[in-house]
Length: 250
Image: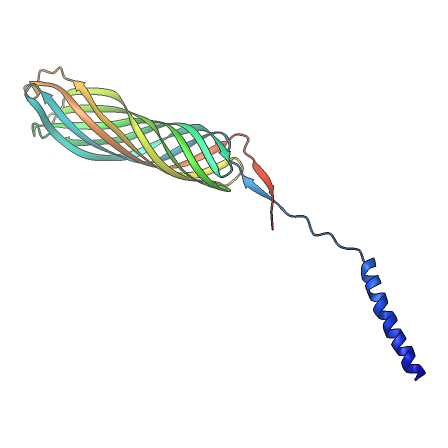
């Protein structure tokens, strides 16, 4: 009986001591939340681009009696150039301004509907874009749309099919508008690579005539309409590239 009482007191004493021991144990602080680097698109940038362009042109001849269609055609070729701009980021929204200039080799030659003995060659040798941008960023990935003004440098040549002798040549600079969409990815804090599509609508441009060839007699001027599509790969270097440290939340 005495042994049973001693055992009961021992168990009770252990039960009272356990909470006290637990209370005396040091409580471990939770580990600090990790810091995550978020890509920031703000800053000036400069870069290069290259790709493909296609132009749709229609040539009409204007006479005192009216308009004579000379034909329409598509022409394609390479483009290469550069761009410079500035972006600033607010939360996930990215806004920007950019100027882009490209050398182009987009030309097409076709027999004129006015006279099958002559042909016209229309060529675009320069493209410029001045645009604003708005985009949505997912860390180092950026999807954006752009729009603004466009300018192209063009040349129209009319020549004899048999001799190849030029009958008329005129160059002009044409202004119009552009819209585009692009995707860009920052693979380092300073460098990014992207793919962009732009559509340019350039309206109509007139060139005055002053030739003596009887096949072009009576023509006062020509009217050329133009639309251009461009697809380019772009590389940009952003000055002062950095990431923004953000504490992760659970």
